Every structure is written in structure tokens, then in C-alpha cells.
Image (cartoon, rainbow, N blue to C red; front, side, top):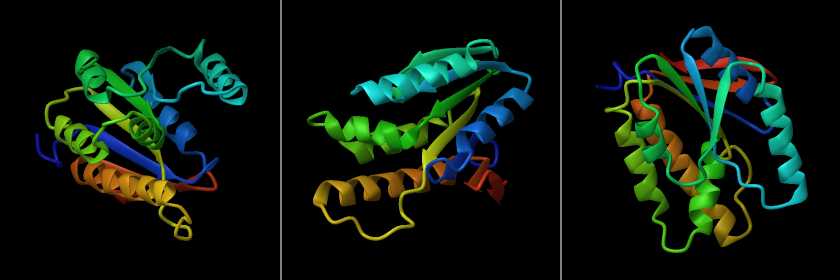
Length: 176
């Protein structure tokens, strides 16, 4: 599959911009079986509570939820069927998880994820935080995070059939 044949969609936006809601609505509109791949890790009580709220919101809405903090390529391949839509929320949490694991080559994982989209038959919707619109972060790790996320977004956008930027709950179609 080339980028023009890809069934993937990238949804970018800032925190609380409405990007997850847009992605979920888009997934519902496909009429396909829905898989939700959550990348978040419950590292503290506040994050555990957020995760539980998100799970409860989707519980009676036809989603099958799986948590996958690291192996997105393996999970996409495991759940890959043409009659499915897989929503990955979110890529920036995935980047964080990879950075926190010793010895992980974040850019290599990102390149592998982008390359895998050529093989995936399911519709895949990626949600991610656009973190490159602000000031230059003051510390090395934050700058590395911003740089990894930016490169990943470019790689996924190059393969995606559609790309949207969400601001104030409003989608701006950038590609497709």
C-alpha cells in the first residue's frame, strides 16, 4: 500500500482540544468493529483515575479496549483485520513510554510503526499531541521528547491517508 492507499488517519491537537472525541466519532462512523489501543500507563493515582474515566466512557459504546504501552507494531498486526478500525490513543504517551525504557531507540520504533502501515489492512486512527508549537523546552529530556514526537508525526503523516489538526473541538483537514 502506498500513502494514497493507506487506511490510516492521524489526528493531532493540543491538550483538551477535542482530538480523542473527534477520533472516536470518526471510528464510530466507519461501521467497523472497534478496537481501542490505549498507550497510557497508570504511574500515579491521578493517571489511574483518568484511565478509569476513559474506560467507563467507552464501556457501553462497542469498544474493545487493550492497553499497549510499548509494542504498537505487534498489537496492530495482532488485531489487523479489514473489518476493524483500531484507534491508538496516544502516540505522545507511547513516545514517553519508549523514552522511559532503557535502551529503546525511539526513532527506530517510530520508523517501524510508520513502515508497518503499508501492511495493515485495518483502518488505523492515531491520536497525538502536537507539542512543537510552543517555546523550546528548557531541559534536554523535554527537548528530546519534542523532537521524537515531531519526527514521529512527520513519518505517520507521510503514510496516512488523512491528517487532521484539532483546535477548540474544530477539525482542520490537512491531508486527504
